[in-house]
Length: 69
Image: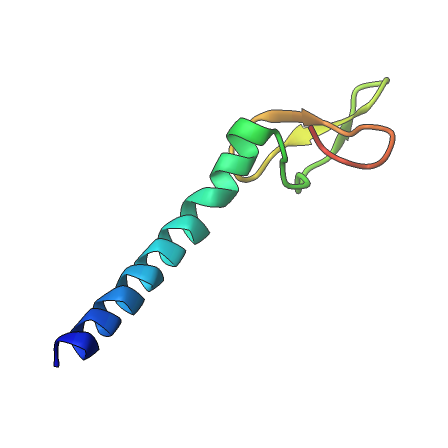
């Protein structure tokens, strides 16, 4: 009986950790790594494509390969 309870608690903890990282890991990528989502409203400032990341609301630029930073 104890082994079954341990397995159930382990999987419950695993599910909770997965849910936590699913919610907070993309924000970490955005704020710490600088990997932003493509903005919905893109603009042109005369030199480069600009916009705001929908996840962190930070002003972002498009580089020559099409990535947002």
